[in-house]
Length: 346
Image (cartoon, rainbow, N blue to C red):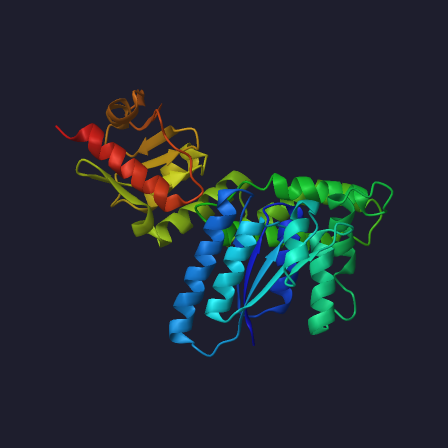
């Protein structure tokens, strides 16, 4: 079967498109981007992944699908050239009128401003692959469509409002640090719409049940508070890929998170579960950071040295002036590693 590399937006409509393609394609890689330079960065990532895949599977049929994102004429020309050189399929499904110039120029650029990208994707899947022939997902699609193009008289509109906030407010997993897990969480939430959609006051039911639905995703073997469940989940992710997050302060070993939040819960749990590590650091997009230790390092001294901060020996914080936000974790880590080196060289 064809391998699909699917780039989509980071809102309900964007994830709605991936919810549908993930239901059909067995061999699929998903990517997400907001507008601006992040789109170009993700397309470069897709091109790199295709080249890597073709080294091992040179005869595999591949398609690039872009949904709920409009491309500039320059971006469109660039990706068409790359797709031709790699001999892969290319399809864009969007509804933003700002892409009209590109849509007029390229056959693979499908634009329909009367529908949400999710509904366009649903129709595309049905026309090409006889997807969801019994229309079991159609009401979910209609819900997303109603809110995305603001059909305020539609019967699904109020449920769509809850769904819109559900995805916008799902910040439990950082999408830059853990993109696949964050996406899986959001698709799980979209799937939960089916449990209420045929019931009376479905919008109120979903709103009432949302806390329990989120807990269900994070629950492993036993129930707990949502904060503790999320902390365990994030700690497991950090522990499974410790080398990716590993940094050093002098001779002390730690891990670096980026906009993960809940440092007291997650940091302390990580250090308890990983006694070979000395500190936990989480930095925000504005350069402020939190530090946690477990009696192995006085992080108040570290905070003062690297960010004019301070606090307690096991819980401190500060701010790195001039820190540059990024949507690529590896760039953030490199900047912090270099900053710590600069501040600690005697």
